[in-house]
Image 1: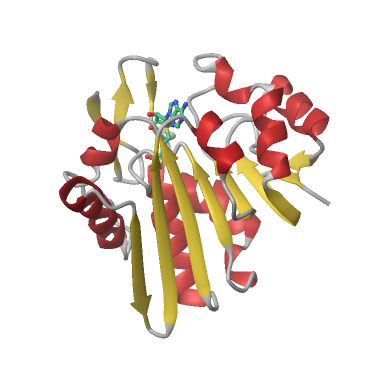
Image 2: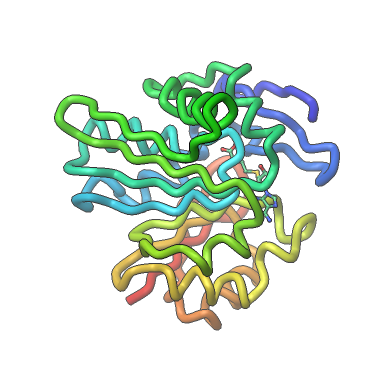
Length: 221
Ligand SMILES: C[S@@+](CC[C@H](N)C(=O)[O-])C[C@H]1O[C@@H](n2cnc3c(N)ncnc32)[C@H](O)[C@@H]1O
């Protein structure tokens, strides 16, 4: 894993295994808000439940926490799915400019020091409930009981990590998404749109930021 600084000044790493950065080089923090949080308007849903698939250092979850604490209502529950403890631990070494990144660090410390996977924080009358699921998201999600309003789908690219973008996984996520729920992903590859559609989602184009092609928004109607 090699450290890099993205164009908005936020830190990330390059995966040697997948030969790809963990975030867009144009800006790791910008990518979280522009491709996931803002198009989904997570703050408009009371008591939102989020699946953060391939949560890595928890940037997408941290962006959701910042937006929810500023504008949201009730209890926000985020399930973070990540199979690599090394990248989870990296969050303790970095200081990306999220207002509440300390909550991600607290979750990670809770996991490594106390072997607990759950953290509940009460802030300004709102509640953040985080559940860290360490393992293969493709095995964990079908077993999940609580269904999601929002899914942040952020594996390495379909070219480098094709097994994460297969139809069966999208079908499993679809069955765990509530009606009216939304999945967002940075990729707009044809295979991604086709598999999301075949799984039952209604697919549309998301914002174009940092990369040449737009991102993808998929709704369960
Ligand atoms: C593009 S990075 C995501 C970055 C992340 N969203 C963040 O904010 O740091 C892809 C992540 O998927 C993880 N991953 C790869 N295979 C996985 C699997 N089968 N289940 C869960 N996570 C996986 C990798 O370890 C890596 O952290």
